[in-house]
Image (cartoon, rainbow, N blue to C red; front, side, top):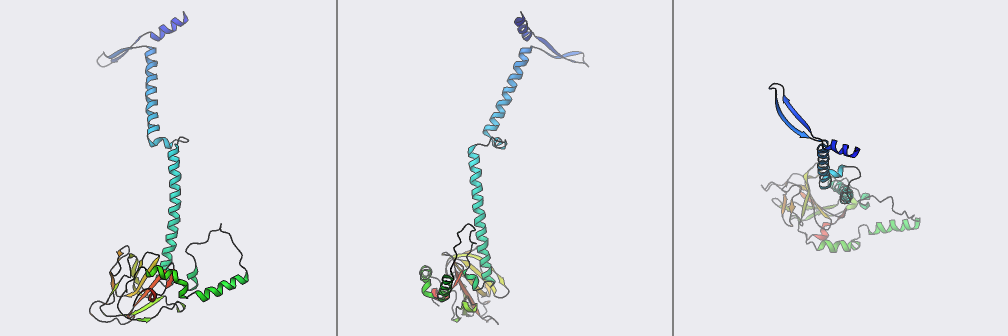
Length: 284
């Protein structure tokens, strides 16, 4: 009897009527039962839960929920972090590289600094103590081979394959002498002559320097850098790609008049952060 009474109460219909007080009339009315009301709440809950499930599963919103991130998203985040670390490392190397180029351009480099590496030695590297005899031998060997051309045989072979162009006409009036702080050659100026790139490359510096006038620096392959100082006018900007033999500047204004001071083009070649003698690789 109790079960039958409970079921009858669930199925018992109630009439819900809405009246308009102003018109004293019925606006709407319908029948409702407790069972139908419970079913309506259950169906509404299932629909809302289904919509939320679809949003969480098929949209990025689910990744915002703690503990719900899928393996693909985790792997992607880890991969992106590794790429960012690699990019930071590469940017640091490029900053050091550009700092070295700036030091070369503004004559802030000394003989002692030429032997320094571009990147600092890792703290995790093994330190091996050097005996006094070994240190003395290394010092004597470095002094003996510092400017020995035979020790640069590999470099000569690589750079000779580039077939470097002569930057301008004129005789060499001052030779390569790094011991005296002269890291390039001075080429006698011929009025009206242009300055051409010695090889294909990209301009990494093009501006006026207080001590050397207009200066242009070109990065070539094989880690070769060419620097042209004491130019009268520059025709290329930073980022421009140039080809071997292409005009990059001039030595005069075209009127044929000679400059009053520094009547020469100063050319430097740097290979792997070390100055090399242009007269070895270029037929002047």
